[in-house]
Image 1: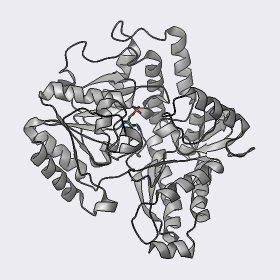
Image 2: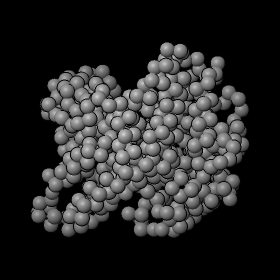
Image 3: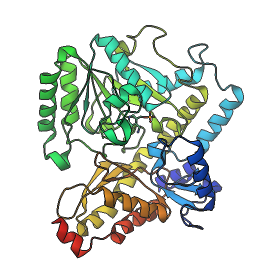
Image 4: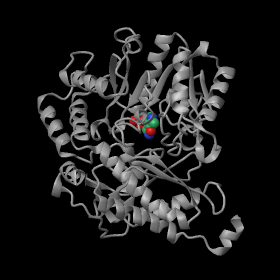
Length: 462
Ligand code: PMP
């Protein structure tokens, strides 16, 4: 009941009616017109998932220019946890925008930046003394975390994992695992990045301790602690397929890093801010990183990202070494303070757990009768199903794409991911109602039923 109330206060009531309704085919004529202009004006490398023209959004609904209302199961890739244009965020932004829009914090500082730093220092894992530096994007945060770790350790090497995604700048692209579409043609990447096996319970069948032993063996053989500045890992790998490591994997890596003078960096850009049913995913196993990179859900849709961590590490680069023209923009900071308050005051951590239970219920039921659902995993409102061919664990990207297309055609925006392109991921706004969530999931489940294998394809696969 408490969450029912909090959800409606987050969504802002009647501004965006909370129901799915299609009045044209998807995409409708207005959306098609925008797509034609887009193709003529925007670089082809900037793709899109669903070719519609958004004019308003709130709660769990996106409204397009043709008057269609679609259910949002993606939150603009895990950003609008509090919902689009959440009332508290709009109010905070409006107040700030009337005062001043920019000074550049490294020219003349202001309160909002410091207040965000204080807040992040208090809510991120660990009760040690911390410092924060603000940036614009997740990639920039991860890249700066590495600069800081190198400055502190006076070492160069960085270890990342199979299936990792850390961003699209040159350094973070080098850390990202997947070639197409992210890396292809963009090399050379920076040296001193080493990739080791992750923990992928569905595919490696290893316990957390076994997977950690594998990874650490590779690190010791290929890099050596004396050369290693940092280990960087997503506590649940996002773009790589919502891969949740086996229990014990992350704590074992963190423990080894601490014992070996290596900075342990958690990339919580996608998992952070209530998304996984805790304020940060590290909390599930009580892992305390030396540095944590955050972004996405931090500011209700405004661009902001952060690195927070141990004071002695964060204070290592000299004054002037960290920053950026827009880093910690005052409007983004005002939005972040209101957003974080909204997560806290509306128990959106609890809401993420409720969302997890609903997703589990729908897909466990479907999976019982459909063996193309190979795995259901993730935590909180960061859940996914891995789609495989019948009677096997072979990835099935074609079915994954068909189900996502079916959903979009029926007014549900759902994202896919995974190194093999075979994972349907659910990242609904935490402000979505139970009814909308269930309806959206039902449409996705219908996508599986509509694409049911014929007996011929079943035979050919087995
Ligand atoms: N790290 C992770 C774990 C991410 O999921 C992303 C974005 N998908 C990034 C870094 C990069 O963030 P941004 O797109 O804001 O640069």
